[in-house]
Amino acid sequence: MKKIIVIALAALSIAGCTTTERRAGTGALIGGGTGAVIGGLAGGGRGALVGAAVGAGTGAVIGAATSPRDCWARDRWGNRIRVRC
Image (cartoon, rainbow, N blue to C red; front, side):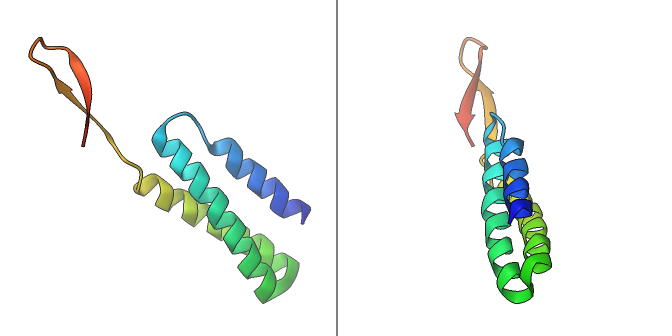
């Protein structure tokens, strides 16, 4: 159980200030928790550890891939402005 908590805290520390990093961190937490539960049910303590690691990695990748991107344009005076993609 301590290993799962350590992995969850490590995944939480990944989360930063930008949208991509927040989504990757959230995805890692959700994936790690889900993987730990499924792995724990399927294979006990070692299964929970493996499930948490695989789930956290997969969740981080999916969270980063689905995050909204920032797009930039110029207004009529030439100033850069952020627009929705």
